[in-house]
Amino acid sequence: MSDNERNSNAASTSPGPQFMTLDEAAAMKTGTRVTFAPGFPAVFSEALKNICFVKGVPLIRVVHPHMGIEKSTGKDRQARLYELTSQTGLPTMFHNEERPRNVWSEQLALAERIGAAGTPSLVPDDVELRAEAFGLCAVVLGEDGMVWNMRNLIDTPLGRKYGYSEEACAAAPSKVAAVISLIDRRLKAQEQCGSHYLVGDALTAADIYWATMSISILLPPPEIIPLTRQNERGLKYFASNSKIPAIAEALSKRIEDHQRYILTTYCETPAVLGGDPL
Ligand SMILES: N[C@@H](CCC(=O)N[C@@H](CS)C(=O)NCC(=O)O)C(=O)O
Image 1 (cartoon, rainbow, N blue to C red):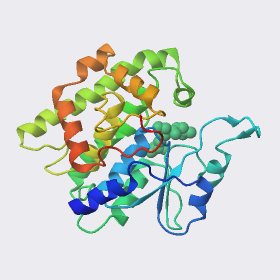
Image 2: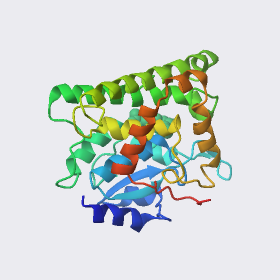
Image 3: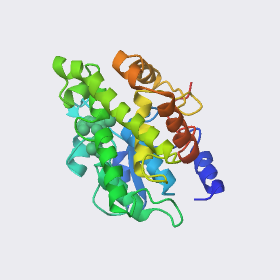
């Protein structure tokens, strides 16, 4: 994607991107449709948006239905989502008439396949580098990984879906910190080889996923993640995570520099979130 196209992508959707309904998205036969929580940088949706941005895949934004029961009807708000995708996680991704993709590794593979010519390959051809990139993604995005444990730092309905308990909550800071330290060691070793990236000497999915997911423990300034009515509380929570002692100890200038470099160089910045900007 050229710089012009990159800028026009951000400009055409900013400041008020349109979000369609799930039913509208499901009825479409062409295009790449991804669900979001308008106004909130839900990290899995945000990361997929950034992956698609790098790959020059134009996204059609869709509202992800909230968890819980709709008071007026007594129905589960996510019943239709479940009917369409056999799960309820955010984000789901539809492309043309293909089956929906609900897991990051499948979403990444799809983005790689449909990405525009000339865009960076986010999954290395070299299998050793590929194993490194997927290994890092797994400890950030996978079960019992960084994001999983970040959700268990406090008791929320979402955390309850990921096994929140007093024990899980007590273990979460050191599990989150262990991943941050791994990334930091990795960046240090890469720096010594003259690389700005987590794997090899080029951008991979690991950089995009980590830089995006790390906003939940190291909040970037509003020039990168703008404030909205919908994310005000959530961003305070993200910011407070940096102050949890085990996490604060693991964070470093190197982690911050890499996050800012990847987000501002390769991703949609400022993030186009929709919702009501403050
Ligand atoms: N299925 C996704 C994970 C996405 C995810 O964990 N989404 C969370 C929000 S950040 C969610 O919506 N969880 C509730 C649910 O799965 O019903 C993947 O493995 O790539």
